[in-house]
Image (cartoon, rainbow, N blue to C red; front, top):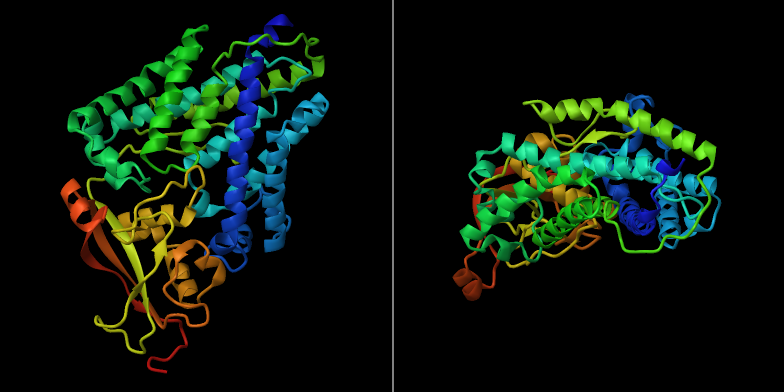
Length: 473
């Protein structure tokens, strides 16, 4: 069937597949390096405890069959290895069915991680990676030209990502309609990047232009994805430029990068595609059957998009095959941060020697300039931003974090930039305080060298010690 394939998108598929493999690699590396403290056997939210209360059908995962930290590490590092193999082009030198299995493997491994990841894996880009990764299984390799229906479904995901985000903004915070949200967003976003201070201090008229351009890119341009080349290519290219602007302005894990990967699949690169035989019948049948399934599953995301009660970042099936997306329907006007401190004093007093724990990405020391971490995802740092918004967001894990700091837990301390206590001398007490943060002005930056100014607000957690440790002993 000639209509089934799109030879002109041969290079587009190649670029998309290699870029997706790179995102997979970052995701698995993030899991391998952070899981022990977050959800390992002695983690803050242990996987074994989760699988005991949540059935397999609700959260399909290999870890329902068996869990140990060693087995999780093996799965995560195996995901890294497969991602490297795909990045190197191994799928191009194996039979078509072998390439499909090769792409299915990282999807199944990452699904197993996400479905037991709990709060740590509750971000929209987890489901987005899984939805895109599932479609990549059916994109084919050098034995066939890219299937038209799969390319269409990739554009359908990109449309929902952008259009859903645009709708949630227009229905949400009034500042999006007034074009004033970026007066605050660069300062209050979850994890600022090294250029966020400068973005915040751009002239307000330019902030209005940024917001207006965002509305155009998210509400008008996505419709053009379903038009012929070169209009569709121009629309996807504009989305890529917008996402690169967002990459410069903050640390949003791999959200921007996976969106760029999606847009690359819609860009038609100038090339002379090789002559390949027609797709085998079994491949056509499988691809069409999957397409019918995904179109049917799209009902709930579409119903959500057109609903006045639209929700963001939700999966409608346990395999994360079709999801709804969106971000920053509401923009905070004030930035709060939870600052965690410890003391070795036997009796905790206000005048005690309180030493601050420094995180890798979240603001702490006002003189510590933010660094670029994305697409790598600092999961604890991101959750600390939510904890500052409301203690309810941290109720399931914050107490466990404090307990592990009191123990000087090695895996937990690896998630931090610096612990103020030596490995063999843990703190006697740990407390948390809430501060209001704001960016300094140009003058304040020159005079103090600090990019932040912070003001104490209130106690977040009173001085706490390990149970069974007597005061003054």
